[in-house]
Length: 110
Image (cartoon, rainbow, N blue to C red; front, side, top):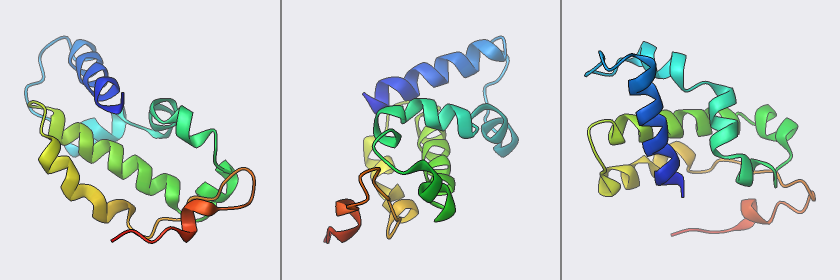
């Protein structure tokens, strides 16, 4: 699902640039993939979080970085293996839940 959304974003970016962009700059990423886009892309997951706390802990910034870097990787084509290298962006990221139980933060991933 996330991959399909990224491919749609890639298409929308290309269309928004009237097909003239073949390279992707940091400025392009920051302009095209902003906080609103990331919240829309991840709305299903963000809706289960305490968004105020997510912002306070800097986790939303990390999610924005993750979506931008994933988009950059998929700009030229699908590359799942390279996306897997992005784990460092979200490692130790706090994900406060809406319920307040914060089960995600107690998981130990090896």
